[in-house]
Picture (cartoon, rainbow, N blue to C red):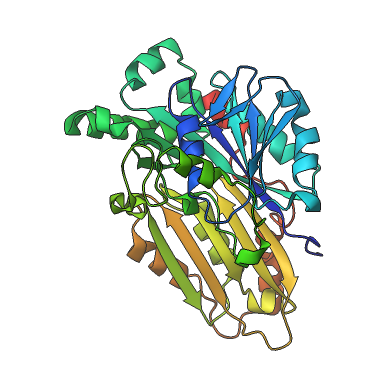
Length: 371
């Protein structure tokens, strides 16, 4: 059980039908990346305009967005090739976002990622963008939307400013029902907190390429203030208000059987879980890095450092979640003193199933077929 030698780059799939606001959301992420280097893969053949930068629809083109951000226009069949390129150490990327074609089958892109042999990537979730104002019409024209929602890890109900309060609530209830147990958040102009999708990179300012025209500089040159988007809305919108973050720390080891039962039954709306787990007698040599997004789950064991404090530290992110219930549920997973060694070793098999495998809790194809 050897952990990967280099950090794995999360790959987020951004999907949604034509006009839902995928590119607007992507632009928002690029503007508010806070030093995070983003690789963008555009799975489309048409001309894709990313604000002032135009990405050619020719398959195989790569355009620099400045400060380490790259954009590639590719056919799905070339996905592995471009992932190999973007995950090279020389690219120095922190996260990769795949913007799926408006007519793509997102679960196929997810399946390709889960089946990839690339050791440098980690599935970062399927984000489905929905146009609130056109939802009913889109669903009539494209009944496959129900199938897409069924396999989403996070649903962004976009353009909610274009519908009334009663209609917004009706749409939200419908989307929650179709996408359960995915988290559902509302947005205007695709403005969501980037930390919902990926952790901001922490690096010294001098590591940025001094003197290079950045994507943010280009946008500000067109009248976009660094504290305000081109649509005139600033940080007063409190993007973090759309979701909740719950921290949990325990100095007592976690019981592996109880902890896996908690993960298997995690509540609707819980989108991401990240952190480290101490299983005590289950594995005294290692702490386990936990990465869960939607239905996907993975553990990566890492040897304890010589003077490292042995504890469990987790962060849970979601929308409409009960913070107190989550904390209580995790607290109930703490191991009781003096567990029977053979029993806890057997219980660890539930954890080991998800160590360094492309394991997801629900097969995406079966979930789509049931939708």
